[in-house]
Image (cartoon, rainbow, N blue to C red; front, side, top):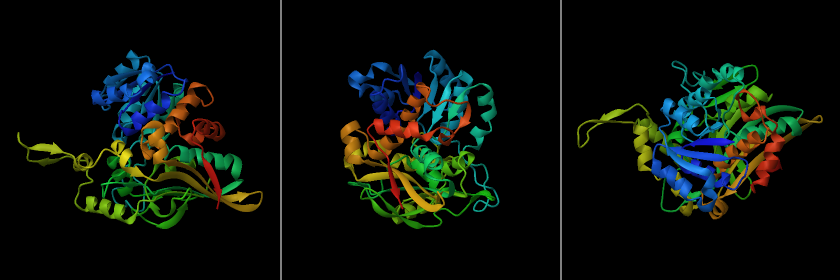
Length: 406
């Protein structure tokens, strides 16, 4: 397998460090709009970097991405950029005849009249609209294959296959006790993506009703996370699992709730109130005249790069899937989870916990695709594949998962 990795930020760099220890691929081209970042990611691998090469590419330039895929004879494109670039990279892979893997799906657009009741354009709609084209070509686009979405979806499939006869509810629950020295507000993941998913109308799925939306940060609940993290208040957030899980896993209700914390929520609300969550450019004065800038890009530029926070970060992050249903005629409730301790990920890989946890999952998926354990055609989510081989391989990577009876 020959891989084109687009994006050499925190997650992309973590991908290279994880993949460098595995033998399943022949070559990995690491491409970024900033060639210094790509070169730095490769150089940091040292002796393990022989199969890696750094390149420059603009993720929004489809023709350039196609040319890069073809020049290096890449079999698959792994997208480690933010969701703005999903569609150009998705289309470039199809044009070049390559497979495609991403960790976040094409962007949503709220319903123009009833944003907090009805869905407009849903996450992934633009990709699923092209599913027939991929299927007819016998090509695979594996979408939403990070940690959330990704591993959380694998957990849902595992629950349906092995743990339940019928499922009432699947609820992805994400929480952490991470702190960052020296910062009052320092998101551990891309602020661009965090704003997008937290301020958009959350989506809920119910059997018989389908997908519908609610107010941001709705239905707060306190969830007790394992491994010493403890109780965290979680709220509804827009996320891909709610759009993916019902396509392959029968459940009466599907939700996603994120443990953000009251201070984090109020900061996001303030950004929205001031219009600083907007992506459309505004014109501001500059030394050489008026300059058009995106307010959200300005916010991102003012905050620390999440990839650089590892040395200041303490605690653990937990991604998991809570499932309630019936097994052998009796009610059952479980939480399938994956915890990463920042101290461990920094010591072992030099990557902070959140980006490492996101990055390990597409690498596991690529290995399953390279070895033929997973295969398919079309636009498919993680739920479309058997879960057990994935979970076994994740454990073999030195990062086991857990199951707690509720």
